[in-house]
View (cartoon, rainbow, N blue to C red):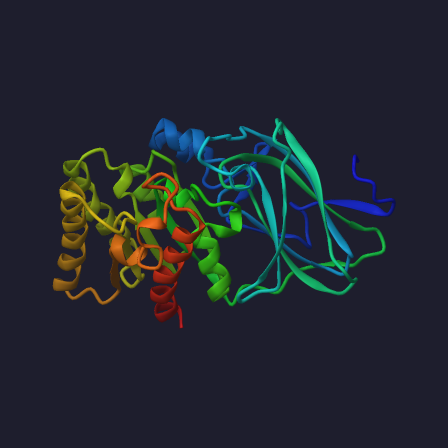
Length: 336
């Protein structure tokens, strides 16, 4: 190891007592959905399905520090996206809402992984959550603690059946400054609920294959927003209600939350898109569906207004806080 701790022991997080959420390890890397499924959807989903957005490792330890040794591939570096968000890990202590401690900051020249350490000011038992990078691949992750420390299983989530999110690069987590600032992560901490992030940058188009895959998942709530990735209003119209019906048929009582693109001020085409999404909602309500919810883009960005993005579409941290407030309030009513 390149870290200078003399008493460090490393553990593979894929082994007990560590618990992995939001991703699973298969064929040499962590993935968000099976490779065999990803290949049937589109090239983008296949390329991005091993990005570890929404991945978490949870455990307890009384170590005075926590280190990581991450082996990575496919690291994304973008001009509008902090490397700490696209390729970094961050660490929280406790649950509901969980306290941010620090980020394992990747070196700018990171190519195939890195090591980093976060120190505490005392040795006491802590419930740790480490969030995986949003836009990079993780092949293996090892956590380092003092060899005198206890490592134990974490407390379970209060709501163990995950919320499943499907959508565009915004759902994927672009452009949060670090993984814990993606809106799903903020909501998860607020409500102590597990989740799965199926956001695929530029590649969420509600194909039959992805709708079918999601319909087979065990979930407490389904949240979806692929407005930005539907290439035309016609595409959105032809797929939006169709996908809703696939999910509803498989899960007659599942709460489903429809989002339109998170944007405070809409142009004419964006208003049309919102109308299409609203039609899916209205048709469901008119057919006596009691478990469908709609959050429009203005409500999602209410807290942030026009200041909520880095490039007029991808949220900054303020934008994600705003989204988390709106989505969290609806999920809180549903879950509690």
